[in-house]
Image (tube, rainbow, N blue to C red):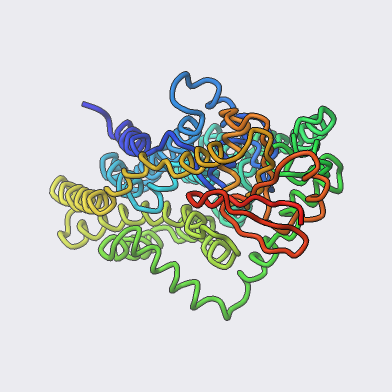
Length: 485
C-alpha cells in the first residue's frame, strides 16, 4: 500500500501532468517556456533558480515538447508544496493520513491546479517557501541542526527564485526566535552560508547578459535596436547600474507602488473582501470555517508558532492584490498553502473537542471530512483537465507562418509575442522572421529603415498612422502589414 507521504506528492503530480498542454502558452507562460531553454534573461528579477532548473528539465527530459517539460517542472514544484502541507500537518498533529488528505485538498483547488499545470515561477517559489516553513516547524519541535541548515538552504533557493520570498522573512524570523539564541555560533555561520550561497546565482545574470550581447545573439540587434529586448537579454543588465535597476524591478516597474500600497489602511477592506472571494472560490465555505477554527485552536496551543506562520504566509495577500498585475491570484498561493494546513488542523481538533476524545473514532471522522472536502474540490474543478488540450498559441503561430514571408519582422505585444518567441527560439519554426515585442507605435521610428530591408507585420493589433499605409492580411489571428505611404 502506498504510504501517506507518497500519496501526498504523487496524487497532485499525476493530476497536474495530466492537465499540462504540449503547446506553448501566451504572456509570461510563453516567456518562461522559452528563456530557460535558451538560457536567456527573463523579465526582472531574473529568477535564476527557475531558469537553471528549467534548462535542466528542458534538456534532460527525453520526451514531450519543451513547453510540456517546463510545465512538468512547475507541476513537480507544486506537488512538492502539497507534500509540505502533509509534512507540516504531520509535525503539528502527528497524523500522516490527515496531512496527506490536506495535501490533496490543497492541490486540487482551482487556482493551485491551473498554476501547477503551466510554466509558472510562483509554483517553484511556493515549493521552496513551503519547504522552508516545514523545516522551521520541524526544527522548533526537534531542535535538529540539519533541519535548520536545510531550512536556510531552502529559503536561499526561494530568494534566488523570486524576490517575493523576502515577504516571508519577518515571519520566519519570528518563528526562529527566541530559540535561535541557543544555537551554537558555528551552526549559525553554516546556516548563513546555506542561505547566501543560492543567492549568488543572481551574479550569473549580468555575466550572461554581457556574453549574449558580446556575441550578438539576439536577432533584434541586427535591426539596429539597442540591447535589452525580451527573451535573450531583457533590459540588458550587464553593468552594475543596469543590474541594480533590473533587481529593483526594472524600467517603469510597479513593484514600489505595490509595496507602498500594502501599508495604506484605506486598502484593508478591499483586500480582505477580494481575498475572501478568492479563498472561497479555492476552498469552499466549509473548509474556510475549519481553517479559521484551526487558526484559533493552534494559536491557543502555540501562539508563537501560529503568529509566525501567519506573518510568513500572508504579506503576499495585500502585495499581490494591490500590485498592478494581470494574474493577481498567483500571488495568493502561499496564503492558500497555510489555509490548507490550518484546515486539516481545524478538522482534527474540532472533532476531537466535539467528541471529547482523541482516538481512532475522532481520527477516522477527521479523515472522512478531509476526504469529502478533497473530493468536492476535485469534482468542482475537473474542467481544469481541459487545459491539456489548449493549443491556441500553436494556432496563432501557424497562422503567422502561413500568412507572412520568411524574412518578416513580426511586431506583437507581450500577451501574444511570447508564443512567437517560443516558436522562433525553441522550435525554430519562424525561419528568418524576427520577433519584436511591443505595441504598434512603440518602434515607429525604426519603420522607415526596416521597410527598406524587410516587410513589417503586426500580430493581433491594429495601427493607424498618416505616415504609413496598412493592409490587413488575415483575421485569425489578425495580421496587418505596414507599408510605406
